[in-house]
Amino acid sequence: MQPIFVLVHSPSLGPSTWRPVAEHLAAAGFRVRVPSLLHTGTGGPPFWPRVVEAVRDDLWQVPADSPVTLVAHSNAGLFLPTVSAGLDHPVAGSVFVDAALPALHGDTPAAPPGPLEFLRSMAVDGRLPRWTDWWDEAQTAPMFPDPSVRRAVVEEQPTLPLSYFEQRIPVPGGWDDHPCSYLWFSTAYDGLAAQARERGWAVAHLHQIVDPAGTVRRLVELATTP
Picture 1 (cartoon, rainbow, N blue to C red):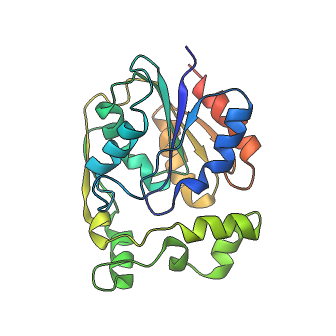
Picture 2: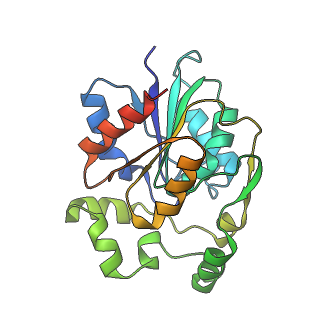
Picture 3: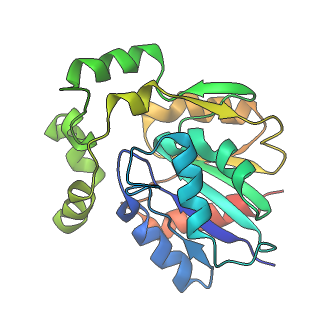
């Protein structure tokens, strides 16, 4: 049975970051789900239990024997071990896309000490600005292929509480008992891509929003790599 692609967006952004890729996957005949983390559980911040809940809820109508390939972008990569452990569905593979890597065991901080201090300097009354407001215009503009895509991504961004980045996310033992791989776009993730390669994962390079069709080809290649 062909696995269902489950595209998990960064909690700092929204599901529209995956929409072009989802459309290309569906057009190519793949089943795909894009769970939203924007309104998890009772509407609170996307702490790790609510991320797991959001993905489970999105798959509730999918038969439990249907395998899934989990695909996580950015900070969502830290949640894949707990998501995998919390699903009734067999996980055929995990793909980390320009993503933070979870520890192999124990737990993982949502933000390491250096970035956490940067975030604390921006917080107002315990809440952060939208992700695209963290950076200069020159840094964010090249991330979007056209104004309409940029508008859709920017408008749905949440303003996360600082406490989201202060959480520690558990890492269930043996979470990587299935094929894992890494797809990266920017030089900021070169080090994490190298770590993924050191773990023996397949690694590729491309861009999700700028080239969704190419990203789909890479995702399919990585998802079928033994």
